[in-house]
Each structure stands twice: as structure tokens, then as C-alpha cells.
Length: 165
Image (cartoon, rainbow, N blue to C red):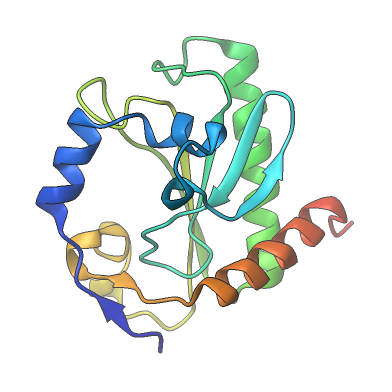
């Protein structure tokens, strides 16, 4: 069992609502603190490990362009869901997974840049700790060493590049 650390939800909400877009900052690499471990990238979108994971392998998939309406562009929506599918399948190969959660969260008030959450629920999690409970940072985020995240990202990149038949 990986240790959890407290998460300052108030500070996070303040940053989301008043700071720069975290996805655009990641893509611009304007601040080294905003760089995440990428698992996939193409000319349209990027997928990277969540900096505040509640589940090991929790990945975000986002368009490179700052888009705020998840279904506004059908072709983009389909591409993002195709990439989310590929990430989910790679997670199932690399991380013990009972169920993969797929959500698009955020709003025009904060975290407006469209992004999909791809979160692998490990086997054996008690039912009362699954679903939304498993995703809530208020319950703490995993304290994963950067080297472990880098290794996981590499395994996911390999799995995405060589999908199982």
C-alpha cells in the first residue's frame, strides 16, 4: 500500500481559478514544477501522469490547443477518446486494474482546458473506497517518488506503442 499525503484543496482551487492553465503550462514547460511525466504525445493531444494521483497510474489526456468545451469539436472529441482508450488499455497491461475510470472534469470557472481523467482502480479496494471516493484528493494523494513515476511513464509509453492484439 502506497502512503498518502494530505492535499491542500483550498490552495489547489485558488491556483486553478486564478493561476495559469496547468495544461498549457505543461505544454509550454514554462515552469519546471508544471512538467509531468508524459505517456503519449501527438500533434493533437498529450497524455501525462497526474501530478496529484489518488490512484497509481492516474493519467490525464488533453488537447494541445486550449479548448474548453469537451464535445464542441466532434473530430477532436473522438481523437481524445481514442487516446484515452489506448491509455486505459496500457494501464490495464502495466498496473493491476479492476476497473478503469474515465471522466472529463473541470469547468469554465477552473481547470477549463478540456481533459480526460483515466484512473485505474486496483483490485481489492473496498467498495466504500471505490468510485468517486477513490478519485477525491481530499482523501490524500499518493506519495510516489519521481523516479517511480518516471519508470511507470516509460512502461506506459512502451505499452501504448506496442498494444496487445
